[in-house]
Length: 195
Image 1 (cartoon, rainbow, N blue to C red):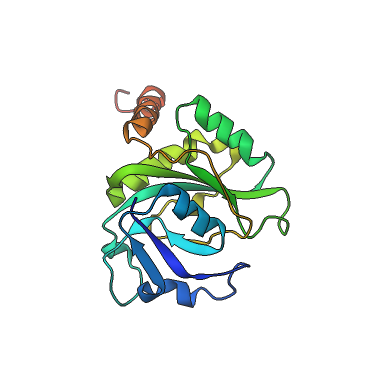
Image 2: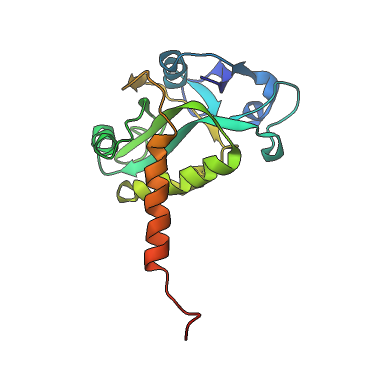
């Protein structure tokens, strides 16, 4: 799997994100295992959903070349992570791992991220389309909506990660969710132009 993970490890949520905006503070993995990525992320390493060419400078949306990971962020969620995992499995979208964010135990209720690792890279446009559908699919659990852009910085956690599957997800797993969403839009769209 391809992913961009920070070299620096933090036991708490960093007070200043400036160091996390510089490419030289990251490792650009081209073939990392899902369990190794989960271990790093669950033990304090920040990461990016977007993939970039290595270099100097900061992360810019115009430089994103794709993504191979999608995650949902649940802040102050009333249910345990396993409830979200069980729901995801029943709809055919079993995630690869989840981890508690730094906010767990500080903010009320449950604060965690659920992560899907893709079989191959998708474009930034496809990422945003899939993400919109994922937000809708999991809306009953109130995922945080500001994470819809693949340029976003994701902080790791400090209590490890729970690995569910080390097998990457096929794009077709998301396909029927996209079709369902488009069908709903067509079926429930008001017909105004005929009157």
